[in-house]
Image (tube, rainbow, N blue to C red):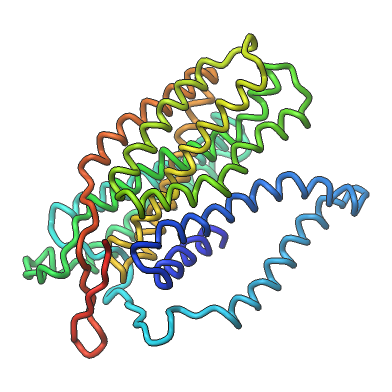
Length: 374
């Protein structure tokens, strides 16, 4: 529900802001989301103690559900799909992204595979051969379910792309390169994916490296997520102001350098310097996230929700990949692996096409609407 809500918000914000402002708007939206996560991590334990007793943590978590429920009612009563007079463009077919060439169709199916592999890795981690939280029958059943789900998804993708399979000519104004989506996917894998992974391991890293208490290490490590409030809107603004591909390239490059720097942290470093290095790396990571979602609404308006969903899912794929790597290597090697992945993504971003001019969508009456993307 949380992930689905995030994706819906990306589409909604894209409807309400023009291309020249959408990066900053999406950055503010995403930044407050991640800031809320960090704030909750710091306040929920205190709230649990205020409730007191063995069930204090239950009441603390339940309070977030109550808050979400109240806000859900408020949101439903006040939010609107589009500004007054604007058209909400829906995809003509549901079940998968509509691509515009056979090569893009193969590319699309291939890009779906890592999402299922990530779920398979999680199943393996819980299986008897690893943590043992699932028995053998349950693990094999989950593997089977993943295979079935993948087959169903591929069948839906082929169904919605029936025209491409049958060589039906796609109007030039409706075409878009799927590589744009693929590049955004891997960019979010290395930005948000690494953030999720680092936030998970950073408290223990500080605690073991500098011999800190768990509370102090957690407080220092939480700064990595708190940077979102400033960094993510900054990435969106830079994308609006200086160009989408250029901004994303610079931020990915800074991210790679940042993780290489973190890989060099040892107990001989002053603690303040280690925290500053972490915050600087965090800025590039989260500004990169803002730059990614500054581009998502500009690829194909009617499919922004589906594109955002796939891109967002790749962030979780990245977290699974990086945390799995961490289970086999030390922290220094872990940071270097992320830096190497960032270097690969930097090269991939150079193949991205800068959004220019307008994208075309069809109104219900068959007329063409042009949406400015630059």
